[in-house]
Image (cartoon, rainbow, N blue to C red; front, side, top):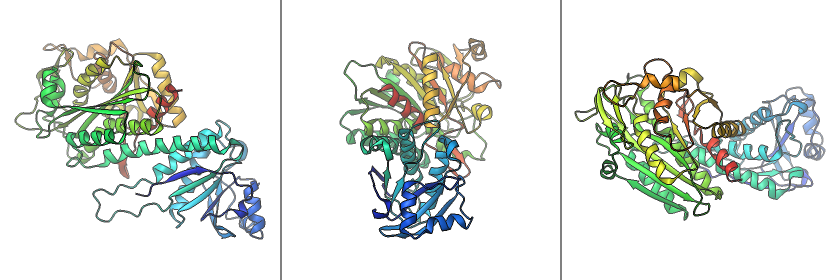
Amino acid sequence: MTKLSFSARKIKDASQARTQCAILPVFSKKTLSVAARQLDKASAGAVTAAIRLGDFTGKSGQSCMLPGVGGNKRLLLVGCGDKGKFDRAAARELGKTVSKALANSEASEAILYSADLELQDGDSRWLLCWLARHFTCAAYRYTQTLSKPKPAAKLARLVVEPGSLGSAAAGKALDRGAAMGRGVNEARELANLPGNICTPSYLAQHARKLGREQANLSVSVLEEKKMKELGMGSLLSVSAGSDQPAKLVVMHYKGGKAGQKPYVLVGKGITFDSGGISIKPGAKMDEMKFDMGGAASVFGTLRTVTELQLPINVVGIVAAAENMPSGSATKPGDVVTSMAGKTIEVLNTDAEGRLVLCDALTYAGRFQPRVVIDIATLTGACVVALGSHATGLYANEDKLAEELLAAGTESHDRAWRMPLWEDYQKQLDSNFADIANIGGPGGGSITAACFLARFAEDYHWAHLDIAGTAWDSAPKGATGRPVAMLSQYLIEQAG
């Protein structure tokens, strides 16, 4: 995969610059930027001639590739719409248009003239951060199990002319966006791997590799024997039917002061979910390799955090297991005991995510966390409620919920807060255990969150149900969400 790099550089005269592609934003009233005017003059009016033809009007989403002039081998005109309405949505469309046009060219290096791109609802730092993240994500290609993968994107370097922002500030914004994009891609790659490769043991090995790369990241892996000693009967009940042993992966990033309470991220890592004895229908069961999307997002977020060297402490916990049916598998009606000492009646073995998470949440308490956020492809009910656009957000503390919602809006990796009312808890009542693992057909995403809430009473906690947002079915592939939201949240917490 081509590694894309970014830099910021002041350019006084675009016609004197040397690049394989000069990217020139044009607004719908056809007012040219300083750079576009310079290149129009140098090309004997080629830019204005293309506009006069009427094929390119500056409408958002349009692009027009022209032959270059001087040291500029190509000129890419990109429509930005009405200048007075150029907002974050228009900026996102600009990024998509540019990446598509460059993907259809042979240009491996380009200069983007961004001085005239004044956001109505943001600033230049946001814009450059977003563009770097977008181009990094657009360069991602899955190749690991393909004998003839699609060609990698040609673009390897993007230079941004930052205008009044200044090269140093622009460079920082680009670095932040690129790091977020690489975190998103890390999550996508792990989630896209098939279940016969990406097993709990594979995730443990991947964590150790990440730890070797970063001096301030320590990694430990709890094996099933140790989990049994700790009383993690709930988590172990999920892996009971599989030949693959469960792993509890703990990654501790120490970027803050020694006594600083950590932010703890807990990811559901079901590397394949057959449903167990409550087996799923065959259609789309292959997509259950994505059921470790929460774990993948923990890895991706830690990738971003370590690259940016944020001055905070972060612990990533991945509860990894494979849910399979066999003679040793947990059966509907079985009662298991969690690490917290609570007994659980397993009414449906396909509601396994909460069974691994509850023990991981109890384990998280030993770090005396500032906050705990769990991330899980937990319920189909959340997909019914919110579709694929918003992640379901639950929290036992309003400030944490508001901060995560704001981070989601800022990063355009959005969530919607759902109720966590005591009224729903009674649906989890059991005649044979302290709690049942499902709460009936009504409010399935809510009762799943209510189940987890019983194991997170000792600290500020949020739960992100990403069942609708972690992957797309057409075309099939992981999205890397909610790495951008979590990264933005941690960046803001780091100040």
